[in-house]
Length: 188
Image (cartoon, rainbow, N blue to C red):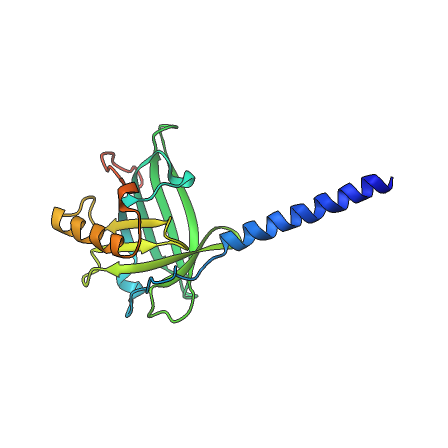
């Protein structure tokens, strides 16, 4: 019996350590070192639909095309986030609803976003068009990056400008996936 209890305790501690490491990794809300979120930032101008023009690969978006994100300010100051896209593997539309909160001053484009209960990840607008027509967004680290636009495609000059900005921030722009937008979203 003592051997069983000893093993159980070790496994319990190991499980707790893994859980805490995962929790810490999922809850990073600070911008990566050397990346300064846009200020001043106006969430009222940022809300509405954005098309994902490019992204770095992650399992939660793998195989997705026609991806958009819609942001809507809530009365409590948080932001409703609705991500939609076409899953080519399942041949069907998918969506995920989340909630974003400012990590500090609402004039600074640094938010934390959650799609899974109490687990938040950083969402930092690192570059933003003066007319809120495109945005370069970085997550909790440089392995998360999105180029967003109010239109499904960017003019070549703007695209090159955003690639250069992302490179200057230490983003691996060679790994960017350029998202196609060929389907009509039935919920648009």
